[in-house]
Image 1 (cartoon, rainbow, N blue to C red):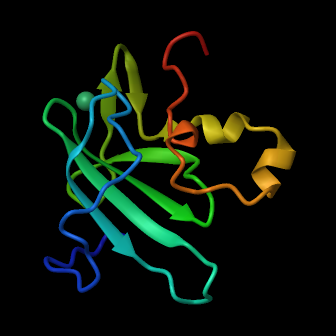
Image 2 (cartoon, helix red, strand yellow):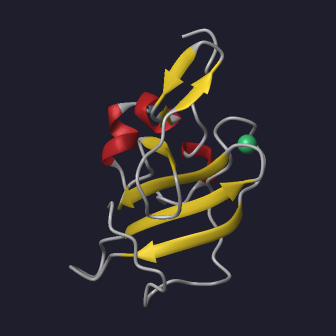
Length: 125
Ligand SMILES: [Zn+2]
C-alpha cells in the first residue's frame, strides 16, 4: 500500500465512489479507483481514493464488502497520515458497516452501497 505507481494500469479516470469526506461529509473530487480484483469472478477488490479540498486525501479498501474504515492518506494509494480533530489524533474513521447486524454482514450486500460507507459520528462515542 505504501508504494506509489504514478499511472496505474487499471485506473478509471471518471471513477465514482460512495466515499465522502469523513470529516465534513462533502463529495470527494479526483476520485481514483484501483481495481485489484480478478482472483475469482465474484471477488470485488478495490481501493478507492478521493480528495477533499479542506481535509485532504482519503482512501478505503473493499474486499467484496463495504469498508470498515476510511483512512486519511498523504496521496492516493500512499502512506497513511494522522489528523487532529478537536483534541484527538485520528488515524482512521470507522464506518457504520461495523455496526451492522451479523446477518447483514454475512449476506451479499452491494459493497458500493453508500449507506454502509457513512462514518460513525465523531461525537458521542
Ligand atoms: Zn472534508
